[in-house]
Image (cartoon, rainbow, N blue to C red; front, side):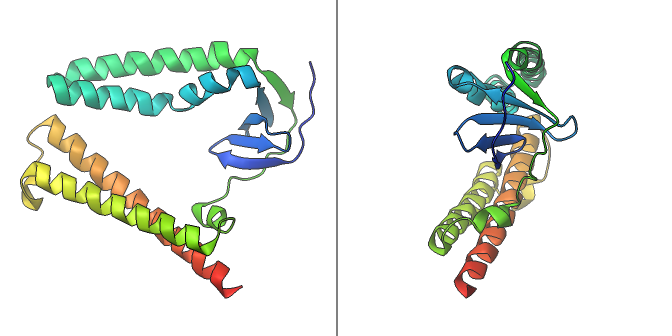
Length: 187
């Protein structure tokens, strides 16, 4: 069944929403879009986070059982199975629209321009708080700042790298949201 798409609004990385409220999966390189029907939205939300689920399984198995090799194997199997299901089963059942001009996904700053200044500042404060809490958790669990960077075991290495990565992203998001809030206040 051939369907037309109305104006698309970016919702995330490769995910759009049209004016009818439908979720659209887009591929700018292929110039294709797949329409997620209402019945498939819940499974799509789960599959959309398949990489995070595999990472969560890795961290839970690695930290709880101290068998990081088993955690890697199980995580890779879960990731591969979910990716195969997503690409070969789920996507095949969706309606495909070809030759679609997809809008560019906005940056954190451009998305912040769609919010109110108060909301931007509150989100920026929450991002900064999360960054501070992640770094504090890393330091306290490692037994000090100097101990956090001694990668004596896989758990400490993963905790340090993940904490630094999440904190870096949170600081970037906070700066972008503050910039957007200040821009909106000048108008």
